Image (cartoon, rainbow, N blue to C red):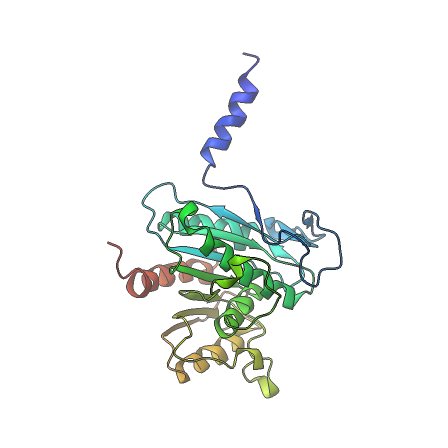
Length: 284
């Protein structure tokens, strides 16, 4: 009986075996980072039963593998937090596990914080390339890697849509010869997308054309950042990018997909329908 505790730990690991060990993005120096590499720290604000981390200096991805019915598609999940913190469960692991149920392999991105917007985009670009280079390892198709972001993470995903061919950091290794373009993009309650003059489209997002991936956009009308998604969706439509846009009446901001909020309960339904109709076109 003295092994009961060890057996329990091993059982818990087995039950959660879809979560993999972290893969760090930068084998050497992190571009532009002045602090030493270390693990993220818990943010001071842990309210609302949300695990928030900050002070990320060694960016990484955490892989979540579907336990059955893998479809070859994958997605990078970018949590929000105003570029100050990362909501690692509500907008990270919980989202990844939802994608697992749909057959996707999901990667939660720990990008640099606080207030390191260029570094965060560099981390997302590098993460896309690492995942594509490791496609055989994860049994995924390198041409079917998408991105989803929430709040600030949605801003990052939108920037990737426009700047996937912009060299934001010096080449590190052969992985950086791969494209970081996403196969599809999902923008959930974004901020910062209408930071241009008079609330027009943010200048960094201006490159929208036939090369922009199909995009799903969702926000609540009572979200203080609600105009961000309206501006972005209109720009996508004008550029003839395949876009589906939902603006629901209520929900506020920062709800993830936790029950009890009308927007949190609505967007996964719309998103699953969109994915099956527009992205998973060759999966039965």
